Amino acid sequence: MARRHLTLTILVAVFFFFTLSYFYSSDTAPAREAARLIRDGVQTPLGDAIAGLKKQGFGTKPDDSDVGELVDEGSIAPKLENATLKAELGRATWKFLHTMAARYPEKPTPKDRETFLTFFDAFGRLYPCGDCASHFRKLKKEMPPQTSSRNAAAGWLCHVHNKVNKRLEKPLFDCANIGDFYDCGCGDDDKKGKGKGKGETKNDKGDKGDKGDKKKRGQPVHDEATWFEGAWEMFV
Picture 1 (cartoon, rainbow, N blue to C red):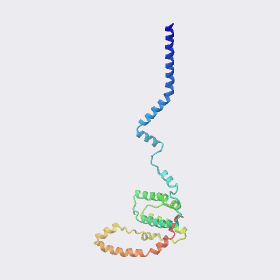
Picture 2: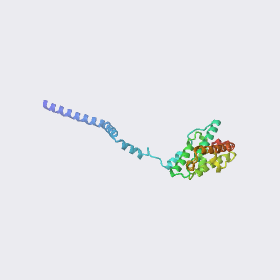
Picture 3: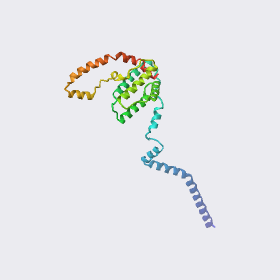
Picture 4: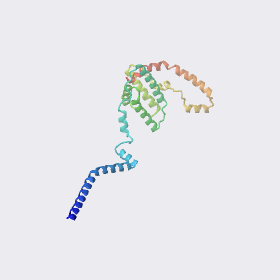
């Protein structure tokens, strides 16, 4: 009789042991699975993770359409309320832009032309006067930049400037003489080389250049000032 009770007790104990083991393993299975996923995720190579991000569109180089959308997003800077600062900024900007166009290559490479276009795309958003930049983008859309040559680039910018002056009822500028107004004094390397070949000395050529520069500086001052009057309002 005692053996029978002992056997029954052992069977009941074994039953409870396996029952508890089953429930314990069922409760901890999700936790163990989560731990396994985290461990595997940590061990995933960085290259695979980056590849996964690229598939979702992260870190990829935008195409031309994306660049166009960025340019059309609008001005980065807010409206510039100070009229005095606005005028100073406008005059300095026109001086810079026209001088830059005057130094544009006469025979630009495809990369030169792309750079010229990219510059004005960025300029139309980055100009530190929000309303001014917005107006410039409208002008650029109406009159796309010309990049085929130096004359084309300088002429395009001159016509854009004149379009502003016409709207403001200001005097128009003769675009055929744009180079005289924006001579940066950099000189012409080709002409320098030819001058040395003919036996001209640096001092002789410098004297002639000084006289010519004085004449150029003296002649267009009034016209240029008149042309610049209200040029800053191009962005109003």
